[in-house]
Image (tube, rainbow, N blue to C red; front, side, top):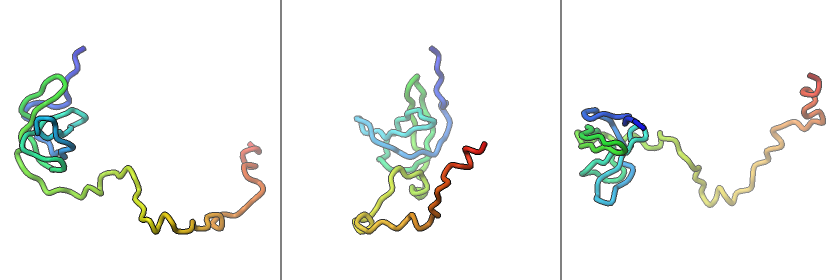
Length: 110
């Protein structure tokens, strides 16, 4: 099975450091490929140059600190509500829609 890595030594990428490994190196991903980056901490946004690529992982060095873009631009997985919003009475949704007896009848006519 000859799978090649989606990155090559010498390439530069802008990455988020998602976590820190056992030995203290930052862990970033490029196209799902794991890269170890020394001298960074979780949450850093840096420009890296890939120095070595193995079969399953790679190594990179920081070539520049970058201005962190707003992380809110990244897709959020969960919506946050305040306690007051959770305890508030639900809005009357049914008033927005007209109640009818012919639901789905237009489908039966086809």
